[in-house]
Amino acid sequence: MKHLLLLLMIPFTFSGGAEQVDLGEYKDLKTPKIEVEVVEIKDDHTDYLLEALIQVESRGDENAVGDKHLSRPSVGVLQLRPIMVREVNRILKKHKVKKKYTLEDRYSKEKSIEMFYIWQSFHHLNDSDEVIARCWNGGPRGWKRNSTLHYWDKVQSEINKLKSK
Image 1 (tube, rainbow, N blue to C red):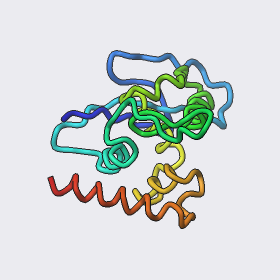
Image 2 (image 1 turned 90 degrees about the horizontal axis):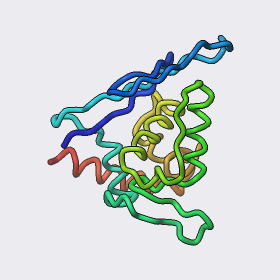
Image 3 (image 1 turned 120 degrees about the vertical axis):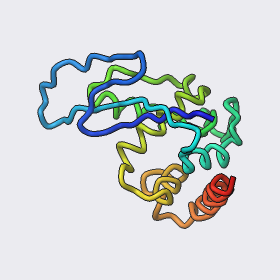
Image 4 (image 1 turned 90 degrees about the vertical axis):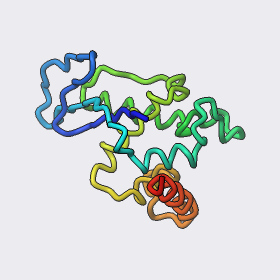
């Protein structure tokens, strides 16, 4: 299985694939340029954390709908909520990237994965899988919450299954 990995690095430019995005001149020197690069990962490499999160969240179902008790449920393979789409768009806007995601993009596996990598690269660039997973489940301070320990156990179990294949 081939995967696309969206690398978000600071300093940034938008490159990769057929899409070229003009970032323009930067007037605010305090804001770094963002480099977003789409890289194809070969069959011999898997992002185990991402694959485990997808398994725990939706078992890979792009049409999965969770949190039905909320007025706007979480949806897609990574069970994205509207606040995550807003956060990813805020990150992109902050770095003057002219890409914007919609709530419908949550139903696309590819776009959900892109949003995950943008969020992860911005907030958790050097964090452990545990911190990333627990924050994915419990919000910005999720890694401190006991309520996310069970979620991390499920993610770890999925990572171990993937690695043993």
